[in-house]
Amino acid sequence: MTESTPTGLSDNGAGALAYVTFIPAIIFLVMPPYNESSYVRFHAWQSIFLNVAGFALWVVLVIVTLLSPSLIWFMVMIVRLLIFLALFAAWLICVMKALNGVRFRLPIIGALADKQAGN
Image (cartoon, rainbow, N blue to C red; front, side):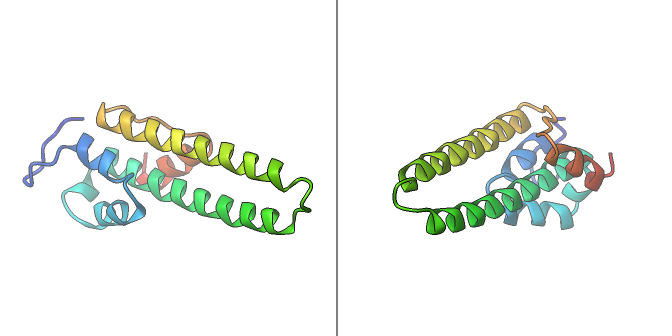
């Protein structure tokens, strides 16, 4: 998966760059020649779904934190930290695998990304 495009950015580089935020992911989905590569499309979709899942988790955890009594507030904050560390680890693994040309599929999100990418 190291095909180089006319811009000089390889599919591996574009796949990894798609994880920076959802903005490059959307750009790669609409901009030729990246939108023609199933590898780049897969990583762009997986990045979008990971961002959406992270945002949804953040909203739920903020609500839980605000509604939690002061006695368990500390435990809720620890759980929030662990969840965000897990999300960061998943993001980092995705970036590294994309750079190495591996189509690493996250549970649930990976299958959705495969389906959207047309694989």
